Image (cartoon, rainbow over all chains, first blue to last red; front, side, top):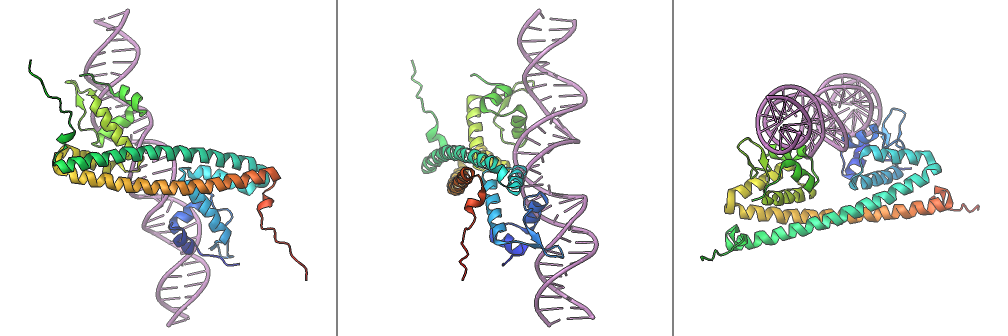
Length: 136
Length: 136
DNA sequence: AGTAGACCTCGAGTTAACTCTATGTTAAAT
DNA sequence: ATTTAACATAGAGTTAACTCGAGGTCTACT
């Protein structure tokens, strides 16, 4: 079965070898096997697992929690419920993040309009409340 | 004109007073005025500015770059172009983030399905490649 | 006048996630 | 056989964004 070196995997996943070794040190890669001299050999399935780790990371999950998940995977079928619950919770979290990011985008869009108008006028004053003082 | 204390603003924006003072220390709040004894008085417009700061923060912009924007605001109309460009760039960034988060959500959804099926079967083995060795 | 609670500054401490340095080993190519 | 590049570990250093502690001041209220 073909295996990959740490630098090949780093290149493929756009990570550094430092990061991969750090993940290993944190217990995220217990499944990666070594040669007799201690060199890591990444299998195709290890790269797939790393993609899941990157996916969890991109949901904002901290590495210590990802480690819990990896530990559950090692523990086998007894932890299926925990793992399911975790993904359901992640799903809810990502959906919330999506909603918030959409709201952020709306505000940014407004600011783009605001500055477009100001630029065309040459001054931000076009947006200042322009109440005319009526003398009495 | 009504003003607000630092703790009132913290409560309203769901931040801590520590964070607000930290922002001030980093130069994000040069517009906040003080009483003669040095106590911060937040105006309505200061709170609006803080909302923009929070918006930029939620796009992933680091505080040092937000400070550049705040400095540009203090510099007036001469920086309108920079500020416009910045928001256009933020818009592109958020749109990229949205796409990536949607891809992440798809993978998470798949994992939810995967674990739902595994849970129903009581074992993850249902997903193992199940090629039947045909004896020849 | 005295006290409690909110305010202030300064600077140190924390945390996460890397990132790198020093030192040594291994594997491939000349 | 030797060099070179990639691999290894241990542990120190970095960075961002807070977070807090110490020590002091201010304001409102009895």
